[in-house]
Image (cartoon, rainbow, N blue to C red):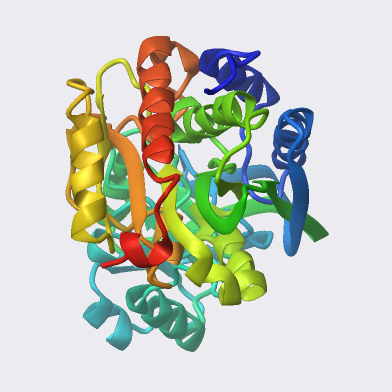
Length: 401
């Protein structure tokens, strides 16, 4: 039977959020990793730290002016410093970018080129899709003096470029500032970015509970946030669920081995996932299932679970478990998180997130602990525990599609 946890999910969330935003390349990210490692070590788990190189980047200030008017802007992550005055060239599609004349100009990216929660991550990360590859190639080929990415949401300062591969100064502006720039056509603007970076190391934390069998269940959640949010929902909630599962499951003996994977760099395309696969690709066949917790416990949402790469037998087991949780819904497969690294290796994946949370909430300063429900967080812990218990006599061959 699981042990009563020492700390509640919500307490773990508050402690992580008190550290501050946890972007990859920050001291707060390192502090959060140390906090979680301490929690896992206290549960008697075997710890592995997987380090990877990453610039330690800091923005000191960003100013964007058009004539005498100052517009709201924020430097994109890992942007080099600059003081550029040039006319803008607006491009809204990949086809327009391919034929644009950007050399010496400031490229104003909007529409197709700035949609979503991040248009350009790290090239060495696990998730670097073909559109991002093409975008990086075209930008390097065009050689603009600087870039301005226009966020689709009013008031949003979510950094849309999060890549240290791009050696072009860049900033993001909210939709209303983008409108001003687009209406002014090619009028010269001045972009000033004060930033600095140095070489550093960052890490994912892995903890293991050996069972009587080497086959294992992997529990994962990402550590990092964007620079403008403490990330209570995304994803201190997932980290808190894993911490409580360590406190409740760690002291007990289990037939199947358990692994906790606190991964880093999800917001940059899965940098920690790529390092995990590089080191442990030959062990993927031992994994019965990977359970990813990314954004749970919101008061205005319901927990949702998808199954990817799972056998009919695993589908049936999960359906039986979920039948006992009226507040949990099944969802379609989705790929925008760390479980996709495991899915790509044939591992059955159970990503858990939330239904009903608006995109306008995610990656903003509004993502704070008061939006989270202790009962909903505990419900996710209970759900995962029930699934783990149901998998104790199962094998990877049984669970795979």
